[in-house]
Image 1: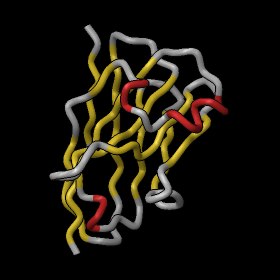
Image 2: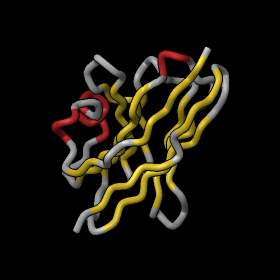
Image 3: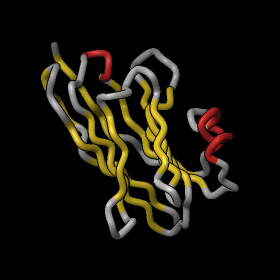
Image 4: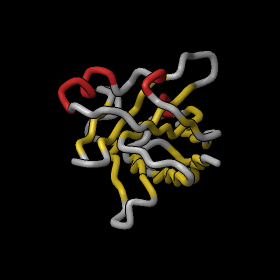
Length: 129
C-alpha cells in the first residue's frame, strides 16, 4: 500500500519559516513535487526534485525563498520555506511519480499535476500579516 504523508504545516507570521516533510512508503519514485492550493484557487506547482540527480525546480513565486531537499537516507523529502508571505497561505501537497526522466523535459512539465501518480492528504500552511 502506497502512503504519502506530509507534515510540518502550521501558522506563522509573515517573514517566518516552516519546513514541510514528505514521507513515502510502499512506492519507488524518482520524481517528486510540492503543490499548493489556496481557498478558491486552482492547485499550483511550487517545487519539484528529480531524485536521481537532485535537480530542483521552482515556481517563480517561491524562487529564492523555498528549497527542496532530501535526507541522506532518501526517505524524506523536505520543503524549506523562508520569508513566508500571506499569499503563501494554502494547503500544501506532496506528490510522487516514477517515470522516464529527462531534466530538460521535466523542467517544463514538473508543475503539471497529471505527471504524478500518488498524492498525500496535504498539510495546511497559514501565514498572517
